[in-house]
Length: 463
Image (tube, rainbow, N blue to C red; front, side):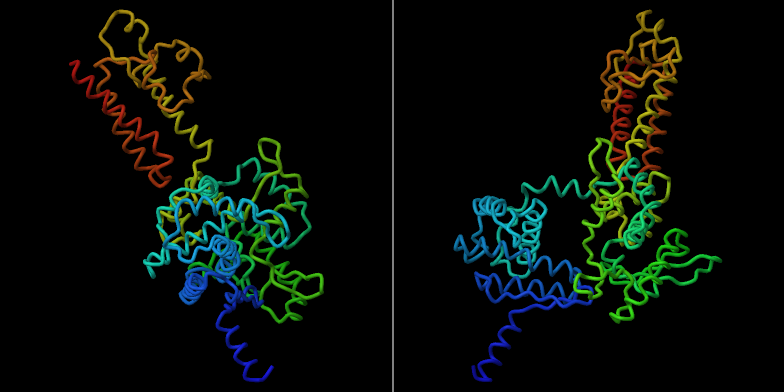
């Protein structure tokens, strides 16, 4: 091969290759063999634009560039030359294709891998709709998918107290310093995995509080430095131990990062952001099980949602939760991270029961049997005398939300109109006080308020 031909080949390869730097290691993705060529060119432009604008981390974009190849394989086998002609039938065929195609290891693609291909296809389609509308598939194709339920679960899953207590117990016994430090940062501060493995040797600095340390890290999504003041002693001790124990490895590899491991070929490298395998090993090592007795399933991001949920349950302000998670908008914290714990939900329901008990202390049975005109609506008084005599009584139909509003054992009369008017005001104040918990927490309170308003209207008609 002549020098000129060799140089042209090199230039062509460089034009069709995107380079990523992940944990100080160079990764390359080639678009040279992808077909259809026109769609490959557009996807390459989409990835490069995302890189230049730093819309996503290089790790995420590298994964996206690798996984999207399954879509191109499907397009080539179906001879689909343009995405603008992509139909719902093609989408169904794509789902079937992903369920039967094999990965490099020879195994069928997992559900999570199939979901990633679909998600990356959707991301690309939405970019096309803005940048090249004539090349974009109909966005209505992405309204439904077999993976939607999984995605909804991922948005809300958090670690129960039962499992969290086992994890904390396991940390006291675990001698893997990398795992211990990683988990402590997840539990105490909900740091993202990418931010944890990117911590540098100067991440700990003396705090204004005597004997304490501030933690400095870079939020890879916001592209800004974050300072966590006076961090908890267990976290500080683990970080100091990790920094000291890996000093030699850092010197040999000439890297400032502290989460290092030695590969089989004796080279030192920074931990990958994906640490699911490490979490699975910890769960098996300490036999961490959920309430059903099965081994717990953990992801690093579940700790982030758990922290947010526990902070809100403890009465911490939404602003404080937003700050420690480093979210720009409160709605992000509420929508994707805060979830109602079952114990909190029971406490809110109990408040309704308390109102019922207040009214049941009246002469409800006598009044009811004296034939006084009454409405069979809720929040009057309960004619079930067990409510009066047994403090620990819980109505068997009570767990059904809003059940009391239609229960035939609940009655009220116009004489209680002032009470319901006061109760409605209390419900309004209660909803305002709990508004930070999000709609999923206050939904049943709004339901009560609407029904109380209806009761007031009907009682006023009886006057």
